[in-house]
Picture (spheres, rainbow, N blue to C red):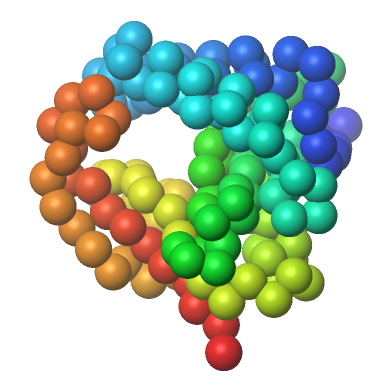
Length: 162
């Protein structure tokens, strides 16, 4: 059965999204407790201040949460909408679920007239970069940083509409 997408908070999703990020990035990039704590803390804060209709949270589910994406538009006028916490589980990776989540989030932004959407990531996540560029994102900034808990080449991508 293909994963279903749902919008909005679901009990346990904060912990599950943090766990998906922590386990994947520990294996793939050597991130540790600093990264997991950052995801859990910032995602918790987002969920507490989320305004339906302005912000969006989508979950990919089978029996439990297997993927997520967030649009944080709390500073949309000054900075643009912030795409965050985009991930799918190992079980769903490569099945088009990430593409569906990203399309859902971009449709949401387009329907609200958000002229700029941005995200921060880091160099080396080629599959994700391919998805972002397929949805009109372009690399606009690149610099060395430690935001993720260890030194990486951070990248900012933006998608702008007329």
